[in-house]
Image (cartoon, helix red, strand yellow):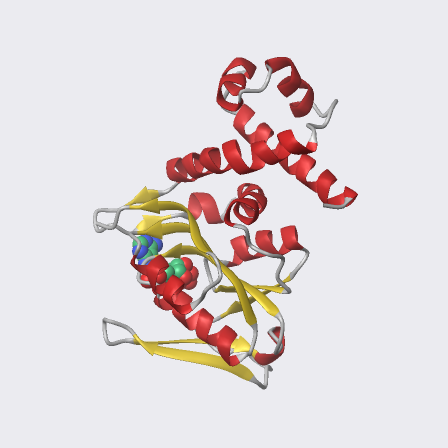
Length: 239
Ligand SMILES: O=P(O)(O)OC[C@H]1O[C@H](OP(=O)(O)OP(=O)(O)O)[C@H](O)[C@@H]1O
Ligand SMILES: Nc1ncnc2[nH]cnc12
């Protein structure tokens, strides 16, 4: 890890601690993290940065559990088992915290491009791309005007409806590495289409990440298609 990467990790840990502190006292934060309350106070107030090992523990350990709990408290299910996740995908600051935690805990390598599906994947895609200093690209269900060449992938869904995603061909080049992300995975059909677009573009998939997995069907389906790490921040039981 070079100096800049260490500094970034230390700042990420401070950002995680600040989010946790919003709803806790320093003593509660000390119980949660196992770190002294006085040290936590100095980190949260920006007087001192946590050491690199402490920072890593916060980002990898407490960070993931706490963010998963925060995410669970922000989403709501309707009577038919559909998720309202607008409390998450509309909050770019929260997603900015998820990106380093996801990258560190699931072991994603830095990609050239973060690929997602419009619409709800876009804000997470932007957060992940910003964290990795990578480009972001999103496939859409319609063709963008004035773009001449697209990579397209079509699938007939269980419902019989055909779903097609289009990505401007110049967004992803042969030989580039790509991390595929989305807000939610359930059947895995959308991820399968994105993985197919990556394959057609001759890009190398470095991982698949979603905030929410409803059941494990979609995650299992994606894991069958790629050898790269596949994971979700939190998994809910399918209804
Ligand atoms: O695993 P799957 O069964 O494919 O479901 C997951 C997809 O469904 C949602 O998108 P939706 O098609 O509702 O489009 P939106 O992002 O525009 O809301 C969600 O954002 C995922 O992209
Ligand atoms: N919002 C949502 N909740 C549950 N399953 C879904 N599949 C696609 N969108 C979904």
